[in-house]
Length: 124
Image (cartoon, rainbow, N blue to C red):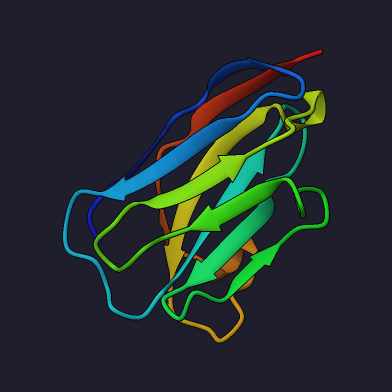
């Protein structure tokens, strides 16, 4: 698995939206789980959204109803559409790749490839 690169972060006002992307530079696997994690200053890394190649999705309660994870197929980027952003969403966001599971985990130890993070800052 080649390096993954997350992009799309930036500064946004509370209530605004951003879309993060995560692209892999190399070949992709047919069967996978991919997920978004975030880490705020002084806090543990938190899994927030995951999707597998069967398009089964899962979300943390903290983002459910506001964030949407998507990936059209094995070769397309992973996306995270973030709506109604709140100051508590401020964090460095990471994408991660791991082996297929029927319901993808939001635990970081289930993922073995990680993209470089992108900073999201939400102002009040």
